[in-house]
Image (cartoon, rainbow, N blue to C red; front, top):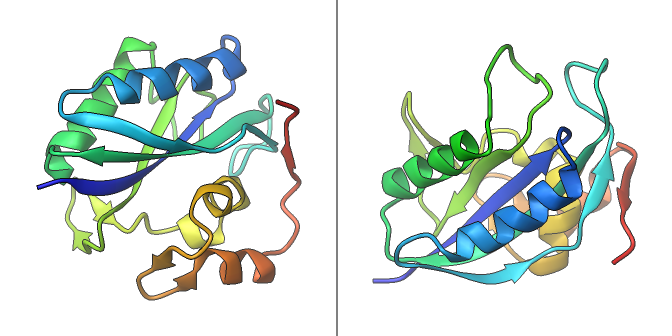
Length: 161
């Protein structure tokens, strides 16, 4: 059975634009997974830890036969292949892949929380997500397009193609 998943992609180290573009291709090459939509790239100010370069962010939609936990493990493996280090929360990173949603599944475990717990508050997720899935309903929060209208300005800028 095919599952629909949304993945946030971010980078602010080692040529962030290229990191994000490579991640799209690598998501499409995951076993039993196909990239079906990708947003434009967005430049965003860092959240949490401000003393670092701006991020390049995007969102991908995939169809996958992988279970949510296996997809998450594959995302971690891609991050590691790019040299991701988790030195402290909100640290600069070469590649960050967050599983935002997996079908309408709601999970709250130490390993995985779905939908992603803060996605409805983050412009760097909502702007690119609205581009590819504006009517997507985030359980407990509402449609992406409606959430985006209520979001305070977070200095998210769409990059030229």
